[in-house]
Amino acid sequence: MRYLYFLYFFQQISMKRLFFFLLLCNTISVFSQDTEPQEPFNYWEVGLYTMNQNLDIENVKKELKEIYPTADFITELPKKVDQTLIYMKPVSDVSKEYPVYGIEYLNYFADGFTQAQKEKLLTTKNALICVIFYKNDAFLHTKKLSQWVYTTLKDTDFVAYDGESREYFLPDTWKTRRAEAWQDTIPNISYQTTVHSYRKGDYCRAITLGMQRFGLPDLVIENAACSSTSVANDLLIITAQLMAERPDFDTNNFVIDLDAIQNNSLQKDVQELIFENATKKATIRFKEATRDEGDPFNLLLEIDFENDNYTNVQAYQDEIYRKVFGFKDELTSVAHNEEIIAASERAKKRLPSMKKIFNNGLEANYSLLLKAPFKTDDGSNEWMWIEVVTWNEDTIEGILQNEPYYIKNLKSGTKVKVKQADIFDYILQKPDGSYEGNETGRLIQKYGN
Image (cartoon, rainbow, N blue to C red):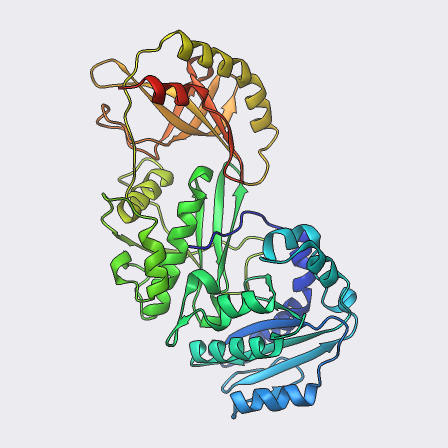
């Protein structure tokens, strides 16, 4: 499964989205004045950066008319959508009218680009903005448009911008992840959309982008343990795929069933995510999500993890993750020899600096884990990891990362408190998958059992 991104560029998104935001606000204001409620419609914004070339607009219209014979071309946003409508705007000054986000953004959201291609894109002068509106047959409309875009990109140095997922594409990547990412008429959501994940307060938030064009809501997970971001992203993509395959879903009783995924490509990818003890099923419900800055202009549904049987939402999140994907938690028994104790002492000396790093605000997609003792039912210690949520003086609050073996009434995902004086080791996880710390863990593997 393609992994996804963990950064938000609020100011840059606000600049670029101003074009369509103004159009959308105009549409909303028109609708709000009508006495009759308007039926929902779907749209997809695609930008074609044609470097310093101008496309022949009349020829473009002719090509699109062949694809959508009943479509009308419009010059302003419609009051209602009861047929296929196409809005096009040629741009001759990209820097002012349709700016590229910038090199830092392109480093994350322009997959496969060389540095030279990124720099060239930033200097382009010409573009064509195309927004297609449609009420029905969302999959068919988007599949046809994605194929036309590839035909236009093929054998050129043009770049496509997907206004819903906010990604830039070279011709080959557009072909793979848009034009060909279908099984019959059903899209492969893991290719067609993306997930943005970012730290929000003590926890992390994940949201899909790109479901609007399929006539489906974008999905949100709030208050996720940041160390569990990748599995949260997987859950969102799988849930979105199942929605696409059964659009008459029940928001109060939605069954996640990995075996029910019809898309063969995604089904194959999912098999690499699960452990042997996975049930591959869970039932969830949704609630209307609270909108955040930078969210897509679409209906947002949040997976509702409020559950009275769990002390905190992260505990129930973890339960759902473990049901769907399974888990691997190894218990290692070892006597703390001199080498392990020495490694722990070195880790403890690093704790003041870890505390400072955490309380100054972790950089995007970093997380800090600490190993602490928990009293077992027979009075001994079981050492487990927590992801730090708050660190005040000597008291640390965090989310338990392991499933206890010898503590009956404690579950993975539960919010717990530990003392700094009891910490045995730390792990500072970094966005690239590397980490600092856990020297004792490597020694425990060496000497354990």
